[in-house]
Image 1 (cartoon, rainbow, N blue to C red):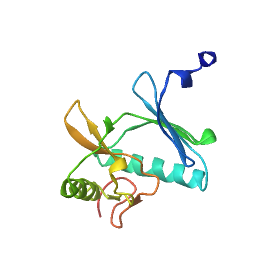
Image 2: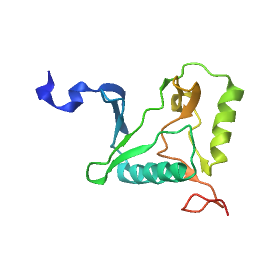
Image 3: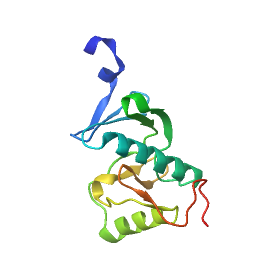
Image 4: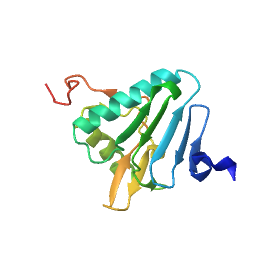
Length: 142
């Protein structure tokens, strides 16, 4: 059973050229960035998640750990992937994110999850997101 290391206790959620994403037995999500521009994408996702936390955005993962040496982040879980969502509702969700100062830049279904604990649709995967003009580093709008 995998030599007793924690990766054997994790459920694989995504394994692509750009990232490996696994959920630990404790429900925390472990994402390792790899491939082209991995360091740049890692840095951007950390920056975006910190901004969204400062803005108290309730429908994105919370950053729990940052490991720059291995390009790994650990976040809270935002539920499970969504297979079907009305296009209008999906657009609404990504538009709502912009009220927190972030444009996702990949507004696809693969980045929408459903958190059963509070019945909330959530957004994940902020590698290519951007902080909108007019929003400061401390999370306040100018």
